[in-house]
Image (cartoon, rainbow, N blue to C red; front, side, top):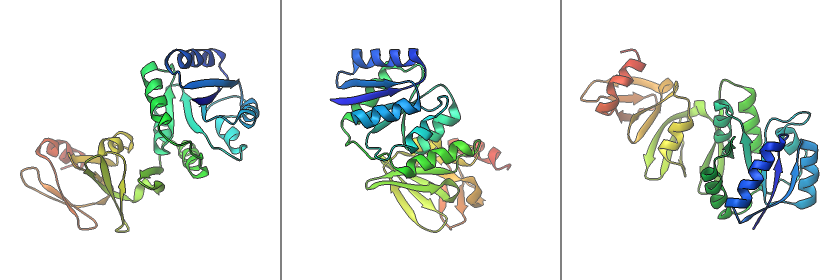
Length: 247
């Protein structure tokens, strides 16, 4: 059983989420609600929940300010947010969970089922720092949290040279010649990395357009990256790729 706290300045939002949890998520017990950040701090300190649903934008004290005032942040954290494509991408970059308002029942159930199988984490300051920085620097997303088998590592996306699919994992290659195996699919990275910088030129490869050194013509052709790596361009992607690079 996961003890949960709902923190949202909108009463109707709390009512709707609580009802959905009661109807569809029997492993979750709502132990408290809060309508602002200050109440949220009090409820977390009082109940020590395993799960916190948190609205980012609240008057007086927003979700980030609230979290910064909690010393021990050992709970699953799920952001609830109204539609804002940039904020959603920033949340994904920092490897946090989120639910889009109005909250979809299937997405809620899937999130709870996944969290129930995971140990309760410490909400690290580094993850929050990454999220806050990306939200403050809009429209540019700079930092990304990369999940690995050992935990999360944090990188500036401008240092990612190209990415290669390896089954359900992805190998990231960096401009300092290092590489890292991430426990995330290439499709996951394609969904969140900026399309004006990263292009999937092949089913198994995505490149940072800023690191192309040369394009070699052929059936689909191939690109040579600044580190010397050669990557095939699929025939299906060739025309779109040539249009992007202005050829």
